[in-house]
Amino acid sequence: MPLQILFIFLLTPTLALNLLDLCQSGIRDDGSSYVHCARKSLSEIPDFSSHRLFNLAFDELILSDNAITHIHANAFQSLRIKRLIMSGNRLKSIDKNAFRELENYLEQLTLEFDSSIVDTIPEAIKTNLANIRSLTLTGLNLRILSINTFEQMKKLEILSLKSCNLQAIENNAFQSIEKQLRHLYLDHNQFDNRISLVINHLITLETLSLSHNRINQYETNVNNKNLRYLDLSYNGLMKLTITNMTSLQILNVQNNLLTSENINGLIPNQLKELILDFNSIRIFNKNLITPNNSLETLSLQSNDFLLNNSNTFQHLYKLKRLNLARNNIKTIPKGLFKFTRSLEHLNMDRNPLLPLSTDTFSGIESSLRNISFQSCSLTSNSLPAFARLINLERLKLQSNLLTEIKPDNLFSLMSQLIAIDLQRNQLTEIPSAYPLTLREFELAQIHSNVIVTLNHYIIGY
Image (tube, rainbow, N blue to C red):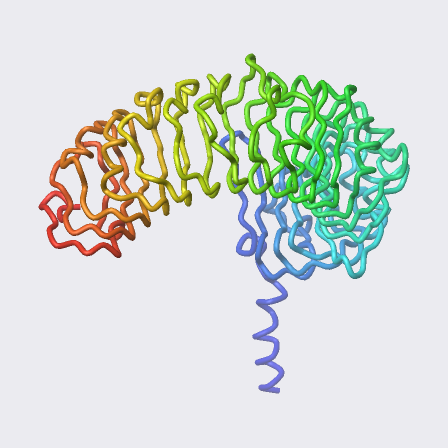
């Protein structure tokens, strides 16, 4: 008898677990309400309808990163939620009527599956999501996206099918949603060049992400004039043809096998960001960048890009961010920046540079705000070149061969300077003059230097 009493005493609190202790609820700044039950080691969806203190008409239910493997038919009884987030749960099955209670309310759904178990889109998703606008499914083992999958999702605008082992999409699979689908994410699948034949029918797309697939050639289509964002990174892409992408603003083709000769067409005039990192682009084709371009960000990291002459960046009058890191650049041609007078951020990290001249940065003396020359083999003789950057806010010179700061008033000349990084150099003394704006120059940022003299200003930080 005593043993039975003890057993009941220990079990009762578990059975009567208070949902208010388990889940947090609240209202965001935009007025939307939520219930947060993420990372609670839940093995099933809590029964909110049994708790009288819960308002069953809240906007968002977050059940991420639990141990829920099945969604049963009555899991959302009496709930009126608009957004359901269940990523990180590795679902094995969903009852065909699981979302029937939410059919007229649910607008956003995020689910993650166990790819070793689920090889098709569950029927509950196909038939009970008439009001859905955003659908994210991860971890399915689909192989082929079948026709009529989205037939009843007349309002779907955002679709994400990442890491679903997709290899092909049947013709007309998007037919029922092609007039309203605006954002499509198909990253981490097995698509090849044939994907463009299907995608080019989606003429309302504004965002297309195909990162981490097997696409070695891609040709944009003249029909899609609404596309603003295109990601083809990590594909082994060997040929890219751009035609009539009049609205494109961001193009990411980093980590491919592109060469200068295999990029055909013109950069769209409205393009603002071009990411070409980790390819084999050594020069720009003569007509790639037109005089009327709007480019603000250009990243060419690790291309063995050649700075042959001072006209390399002609027409880039609106450029604000330039990344030339890891290109084996040894010299910066005189007058290189005469066309980029709007440049604010410059990254030249890991280039074995020869000494900089005092006119290296001519043209961007007033515009430059952030500059990084880390691991560039710079000696102290190159430092006077930076003295002309009067509006500089952040200066990174980590891992160089600096032995002294010269001129002595180098930093004080930069009246807007906020942060300096001099880690891993060979400095023996730090000068005493700094602008009052400086906030980040701690001893930790000059470690690996042999500091013999530290002035009182530095010690006071």
